[in-house]
Each structure stands twice: as C-alpha cells, then as structure tokens.
Length: 501
Image 1 (spheres, rainbow, N blue to C red):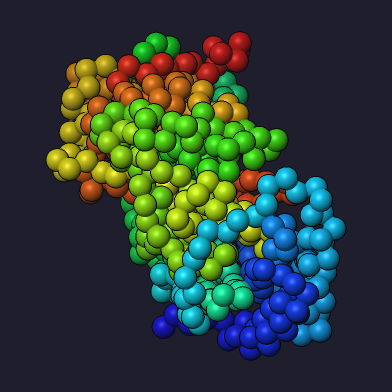
Image 2 (image 1 turned 90 degrees about the vertical axis):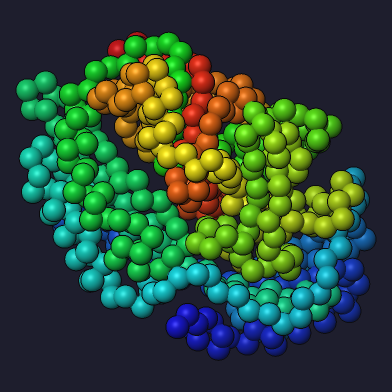
C-alpha cells in the first residue's frame, strides 16, 4: 500500500504551521502560508555494466510567505522548530514592508475556497526508495550487458533518477495539505563506433520519465523487453542510413518526439506570466499575448490542448498546488483557437480571473512558488487512426521517433527540432532510416498544418524532470501526452549541411 513517509509525518508539521501563521497574523499579514518540504533524490549511472556514480540527496526545510499591504515577503530556513517558524514569519513580514515602496503592482490573490485538512499521494505501486540500491545497479548492469552482447554495440550508458517529494502546506484561510509524489526515469543509451571510418552514433531508449514507482522497471507502463531487444538493430540501421535531402515533407511525428514540441511551443507559450512579460530575462516571453485570447488561430481545427494537474502518472500531477489550489483540468486550445492560460493565484488576481487553475510550484523550501507548467497535452483523434494509418496517407514524407536537440526563439514562435531516428516514407510505406534530420517552422504554421491525429491507442504521456524557469533558477517535472500526428509540408533541414561539415 502507498503511504506517506512516516519520517516526514513525524515532523512537528502542524505545530510549525500554528507558530508561523499566528506570528504572521500578529505582525499584520493579510495572507500567510507555510510549506515544509522534504525532497529525496537518488541518481545512479552505469557505464558498460559497471557502476560509474551514485548520489543520494535529502533536502529538508521550511518556508513562510506573506502578503503585507499588497507586497510579498518570503523567508526560509532549515531548523524545524516552532521558534524558527515564528521568526521566519516575522522576517517575511519585515521583508514585505521593506520593499513595499518599490512595489508598483499590489498583490491581489484570486479567491480559493478553504479545503480543510487533506492528504494526497501520487499513483505508484513500489516506492523506489524502499528498493535496495544494489538491486537497482544490478538491473541497470543486466540491461547494459544485454545490449553489449549484441554485435555493433560498443558502449552503453544507463542511468536511473528517482525522486520522492513530500510537501506540507498550511495557510491562514484554513487549507492544510499533506502530499507525497514519486517519480522515476530509467534511461539507456547505446553507442556504435565504425572503426574504419571513425564515425559513431547513438540511440536512446524512448521510455519517458513518469510519475510511477519502481514497478516501472519491471514492465508496468513500459515494455522494456521489446525495446531493448529492438534497439541494437535499429542503431545498426541508423549507422548506415542515408543523409536526408533537405526540402519540404509531410511529417508523421511519434509521441516520443511530439511531446517536446508541445512543451516548447504550447506549454511555455501559454504560461500567462510569460505572456504578460514577466519571464523575459530568463527564457523569453510569448507570442500568444492576452489580447489574442479567443482570437488567435493556434493551429488547425483538430488541435485541442488541455492543461491538467490530475492525470495519473503525470509528472506535474498533484492534489493541491503550492498555494493550496485544488488540482484541475482545463482547455488551453480548443478547435485550434487559444482559449486559456496557465495561472497561479497572483497572476489570476492580476488579470481578474475568477480562480487560479493551480499552477504554483516551488522546487524546494528555499524557493518562492512560481507559476509553473501543468501537464499540457494534445487530445487524440476521434476516428481511431493508427500510426500506420497516418503513414499510409503520406506519399513523400518522414516518420520521426524520439526527441533529441531543440531550439526555439524567445517568443516561443520560431523553432527547430531533431529526433532519435527518422524513416523515409514513400507511397505510404516506410523505406529505411534517414539521418541528419531537423524540422523547422513557426508555431502557428506548424500547428496549422496538423492534418490528422492518431487515435487514443497511439496516445503516450511523455515528459521531462527538468523544465527550467526563473531567477534564481528552479526546475519542475512536467508531462505531455499526445498521439501520433500528421503535419503537411514542413521544412526539413540537413543538420550536417547546415553546420557546414
């Protein structure tokens, strides 16, 4: 059975909350919240079936955030006692008063009902931190040996990242949340070297990071046996593949590649703080500005994108966010038109929205919660089409599988993406692998060319552990679900020619 870490529950969580919130109230705060966070992170790396590195980190602390006269104040510490909690609350109030004269935009938090004293645990079977480290090393080593036994595989890198995130939250309105999330990411990369030419290439497993436990490595949620068995032959094909002829092609894009395009061109672009210009100095703003809400043609009529903090095994799924807002699902793009944004309470209040949609997140007690990305996902088609059906409808095109490098401008508009492997499509059939492929477009042209979607059976939840944002920088886990999809007449570059090689 899933249970919240008893060591976390043994901390004086409610006493800390009582002390901090009372001190904040007595000092004149209009709003106050406390977070206690324990984040356990474990990373293993195996090189050619031998352990290369192992790290096990435990980050524990508390934070108090307040609003005083329309100004934020924040303080954090590591001593979990009531005296420290009260001192941090008073320090946060003092900070708010110190910077109040510099604040040109008073904080207006969107309303949120009190949710009482509630608990949430993410969907997993086996807590990876309850599995001995030696067993994990043996699993990665065994997979590595399996690949190394294949002809043409010269090196194998294997890694396993695991996180257990515990959060306790309490605010003056009466919401108290206790939550636990578990996420995991196994990855193997096989390398092949041609001794005669000196040419080398690599291929990585497609299994995405997920909000699951150690059962993921045993085959729950992914068929590792089949993927590892196929990988050597796929890499051998890639080593002898022809270099792509640049031009315009119809593209059938697998979910293992398309999730990243969604992340960069839709997920970041529909963060309202970015669209309002508050994120410009780190990673740019957004072309999808609020004046275009309800009017911007983001893509074709087939395009339906949601923000979702509730989907099972989503990396951004929670019960309540870091402002005590209950997790929700909502529309961002409907029938190809921009209809929504991702909000936290501060941004929602600033634009007059009735309520936040629960997108506040801090990656540790040391940091202030920010508006962060939900699980942003593209809905499947309704006709039940398979990936093979999409390929069959293409006369001259490329089928793209797996993500690799990417580039997008500071407005989330002009972009370029590559992949793990590429297949020529001729007369509705796959006709061997290609290499040196990158596709290039603008966000609205690309999504406007969406011509057909795979059905629900092709829909896969991809994602990343390390979405970056803010200064000081924070990272957040996020998933993106999508089906296979067909895009027409997209520019394809030859990366070797573009590099002048």
